[in-house]
Image (tube, rainbow, N blue to C red; front, side, top):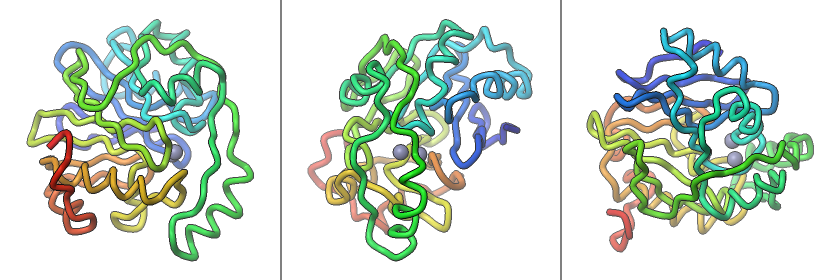
Length: 237
Ligand SMILES: [Zn+2]
Ligand SMILES: [Zn+2]
């Protein structure tokens, strides 16, 4: 779990096949997503590896209920005492220890194969955790990030926009950048997912970070607009 700097103040922490992120807001550290179950100690090692103390963690933001993002939340909360923030729809899932609603593949053969071979192995449960703060669409969080509701991949998924350094979007699994910027392999509702991406494309951000795949370090919102023409009626534009 070696943390990789994305831009000053933002680190990508690869955990198995998913990325968590560390963010230095200038007023403590924010952790975005927690990896599969059993990875909390490794996440704290990543905090030490960037020269910081786990006691500096102020907030844990969880993008959605899937086990590769919320799996170590309960454990990380025990170790740090930091409060958790989620969208109310997926917060209700994690409080009850549920991790998965039915998913279908996005168009394309590779996505169909991912769905057929990997989805049956995906944990349907996570350790239940208290979620202290529920964030709705457009809400500015005390840590300085703005929550953006991006349903489609998961009904209660949040992306987060940090308005520093030209804008840094934490897109979660709204899209992926494993083999170029593309839809994620799996959605609860792919049309809804496309509408969420068109809303994200209406925003301005230089950098984009993903749950799966590499971060885009410059010109990220222009790349989103080329792929998913921006929604003119975006509620958060
Ligand atoms: Zn997911
Ligand atoms: Zn994921």
